[in-house]
Image (cartoon, rainbow, N blue to C red; front, side, top):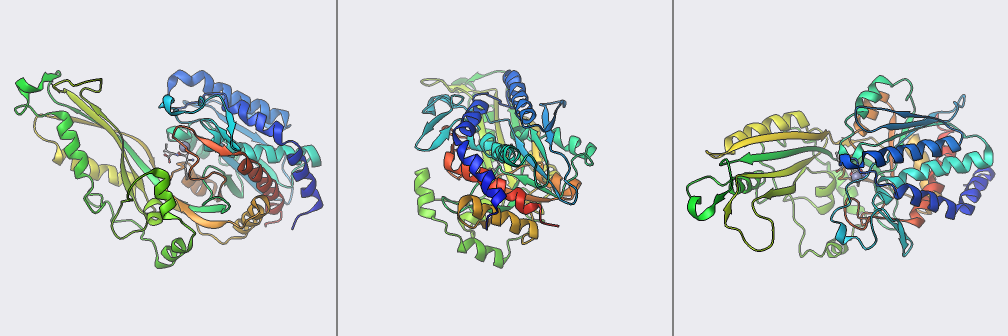
Amino acid sequence: MTSPILDKVLGFAEQQREQFEADLAELLRIPSISADSKFQGDIRRAADWLVGHFGDLGLQVELIETAGHPIVYAESPPVPGAPVALVYGHYDVQPPDPLDLWISPPFEPTVRDGNMYARGATDDKGQMLTHVKSVQAWLATEKRLPLQIKFLIEGEEEVGSEHLEGFLKENAEKLACDCVVVSDTSQFARGVPAITYGLRGIAYYEIRLTGPNRDLHSGVFGGAVTNPANALSKILAALIDDKGRIQVPGFYDEVIPLTEAERAEFRSLPFDEVAFRKDLEVEALTGEEGFSTLERRWGRPSLDVNGIWGGYQGEGEKTVLPGKAAAKFSFRLVPGQDPEKITTNLRAMLDRLLPPGIKMELVESHRAPGIVFPFGSETMQAAADAIEQGFGHRPVFIREGGSIPIVSTFAEVLRAEVLLLGWGQNDDNLHSPNEKFSLADFHHGIAASAALWERLATVQ
Ligand code: BES
Ligand code: ZN
């Protein structure tokens, strides 16, 4: 299965294990939090770190300014007769709070039990870096790559990739490629690597309700003045029924249903539902009636309140009727659903639900459609072989519930096949305290990536 050239490349990677881990730790030390403007300097430091790193590998590299956070672009020389791969990843991370739940501080990478703990360890610095390191190993041993590789690493994925779409459209020629490689998803389970062929989309909102012009004594005014926190609870509760069906008119009209064949595929995966539930310490799992847990997570829409506030949050009690209340909530969408249409119908529904005495503001943010890719192509087979080589197991084909907003644009604008090759695990705590990435998965990912370049080079 393996060639003498690849053996040398993998040998180099093996010998550099500690150095590669040290490089990852260095990047993880930079708190590149895209959502919080206080960290703008650190966003830039992370981008600069990557620029330096690509430069050291001898790649042509550019730091591209946008109206938001910079994009890092790097490329190796063209290889006549061979295809072009574009690696996409992100150097920005989610906010680390609540800080007191971290065992070691989020930006002081720490190794425990074979895992590197830090914000961004798996999402996405660790996963993204596997491709940089595999390129380093190829160049150090062979002085060349078997195909041209372009790197597009952005700093706004965790805030919806707002400025990337325009960049992609304006630079379609520069970014032209045969396939896009993204490692920002997960394996199915330990020892069960996966190729992800579908992601859910998202539509995210903040609803702000205003009642009286100031906070009031709930004894003096309660019962006579509409309380915005009461109104908010009622409105949010009306968005979904007891069977887990979202109540926005027309919400399911365009949903592409899961086929029987796909449902059977999901059932055949080695999913341990009891272990999944126990890991979360919940008594029961719930969701849309008539669907399994994997179907609910990967192939059906959902609604989550992501944050909710209003009234007194401090110690003890305060008998207050708050003047304002607000919530952030989002739908995960599946293929077929149109985020714009959903927003229009949602607005109309909220207007109807709004009780007298309350003013509403609805702010829209992230939106991305759900996607599924056909699978079984030669490129996907090449990826499956490379993963088998790197991880020692053949991957399963799965869908996942998270979103990577730019992925649908890659397929549309670059007309390239997208390979979602996740090296993470579902319990890596992405977006949660104690995010981690298994160092074994980091090195397996580097090996799989190194093998991928050799295999992709032979796909016509
Ligand atoms: N890496 C995740 C997406 C992901 C996680 C896909 C797990 C599949 C499995 C990505 O960085 C992410 O979190 N994206 C955001 C996008 C949002 C901010 C528009 C998400 O899904 O919440
Ligand atoms: Zn994320």
